[in-house]
Image (spheres, rainbow, N blue to C red):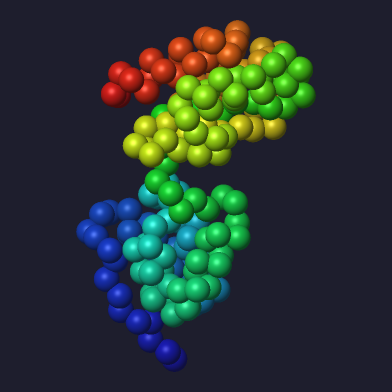
Length: 167
Ligand code: FES
């Protein structure tokens, strides 16, 4: 039997225990790669060089493979999550009520494109195809809360207040 390679986690953060438990469950086999990256993503919110390198070494897979998987699947993120985020719904019901204009207004106000994070990591502008609140259209999900009754002007104000209050 091949003994798993002992590799110390990047830090003593307790979340590495969750990641480690996932790898242990799979006997530290290379097949555990996707599940393990999932555990990292869920525990830390993103995958960075350090975590990819740790997982790759521990599971004995080439770093190029870990990167390949991390960049192939859209649910993995290589960037830390922003402090605040706004997901504007671009589903049909919201779109016909002008939600694309809300994206445009937020994009101009924060000088980022949809799908990007401001350079200071404060704000991410995202979009979705129907967030399941069509009756309230147009809607956006701001820091996890559904917000309705939106216009391009008030969404910029709502987001601006959150981003500038430093919380
Ligand atoms: S289309 Fe926007 S919530 Fe359904």
